[in-house]
Amino acid sequence: MAPTIEPVNIPAQPLPSATTVVIIGGGIIGLTAALTLAERNIPVVVLEKGRIAGEQSSRNLGWVRKTNRHAEDIPLALASDRLWAQMPERLGADVGYRQAGIMFIGRTEAQMAMHEAWLSSVQHLSLDSRLLSAREIADKVPGGRGQWVGGLYTPSDARAEPTLASSAIAKAAMAKGAVIIENCAVRDLVTNAGRVSGVLTEKGEIRCEQVLLAGGYWSRRFLGNLGINFPTLPLICSVLRTRPMEGPTDIAVGAPDFSFRKHKDGGFIITQRGALDASLTLDHLLLGMRYLPQIKAQRSFMRIGLGKEFFRDLGLARRWSGNKVSPFEKVRVQDPAANQALNKEAMDNLKAAWPVFEQAQIEQTWAGTIDVTPDSNPVIGPVAKIPGLTVASGFSGHGFGTSPAAGHLAADLVSGHTPIIDPAPYRFERFL
Ligand SMILES: Cc1cc2nc3c(=O)[nH]c(=O)nc-3n(C[C@H](O)[C@H](O)[C@H](O)COP(=O)(O)OP(=O)(O)OC[C@H]3O[C@@H](n4cnc5c(N)ncnc54)[C@H](O)[C@@H]3O)c2cc1C
Image (cartoon, rainbow, N blue to C red; front, top):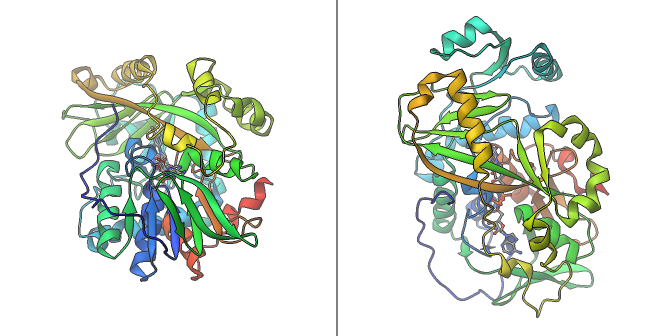
């Protein structure tokens, strides 16, 4: 069962006939972009096929990190750190942002070599990341009996609560004039002389000047219907949450085969960090070659399987016309089953490393589908082939932490403002 977000009272209202910007997708990226536009008094309508934050944005672990990001992705993370810190004032709400630090720990010299390589790749950025000895790990996270060669620690990394953040952002956006409509799938774009002039939804048409596609895992299918190949693949991550308990630390800890971080209620959010489910779909077969380097590097990380998902996905249309029910109405909320075997592995590995977790009682389990690009960075940029269309998707399992600046950047691009950071690393064209 997916985590329930803080309730948001979204008034039922008819579809407006026109606006300036339509945002497709009410996840944290679309909502943050909407807030930024509304703060600039730019009319904006967010259309969500299911419920806001029903997919990745409520299901993630809540890690807000710079550690282990590509060097070129770090300016976005640093800009996000600043924006997260301003959230209480900007939103009038606490979204659980706490700079309690993030620590990755390694059991082998090879794992530590990867951490060292990352640290030297970001040397020029003057982050507060540093290597830790086994002794320092024991001091910071007492009560352990794991054998660690060392760790990588960034005190300024943080966490925030996914069940609070999107709700507070949506409320603030609506208070500034943004319109949000749930249960309203966008089926297609409307164009005039090749340029975006509106969107066709299951409830009718809206005229607009700009469209921001922030559809997460679904953006590939939406663009595919327009003849544009956006190469993302789905991976499924399973998660569990414990009841409130006495834990070893406030720091979020990522080991090779588990991770844990403190939840706002005093429980812990835990995952098998060493494994994700890759349930094969047609896209895995179509795009597999583009992902070969990632697959080779992370073969042990992916649990590849052929099952029901292949046929379920095959049953969803890849091409449709705007007057027909689209795949987005057929799947209001993507809700994969949690892999309880992976969750058990995570718990067993964690208990072996920190026995205090022997007393953990599992409160909830869930899973979410993440949208991974070939270089694990998102696209945040215009689509040259269709003027007026901008994409912000493909966050590859780490878009919650950077969402404040990513949504801001998307809003900058659609409204012609100076971008909050250089958008070059995120351009769509790198995949063409
Ligand atoms: C289990 C898990 C753990 C994660 N852990 C972390 C973490 O610790 N830190 C981190 O930084 N990131 C993490 N992530 C990744 C993070 O959650 C995502 O990168 C981020 O939430 C992406 O937000 P989004 O708005 O792009 O996508 P989503 O939240 O998926 O939102 C997209 C929305 O668009 C809607 N939509 C799609 N198509 C249409 C359409 N045609 N019409 C109308 N609506 C449409 C969908 O219904 C959906 O609600 C994790 C993800 C998962 C699943």
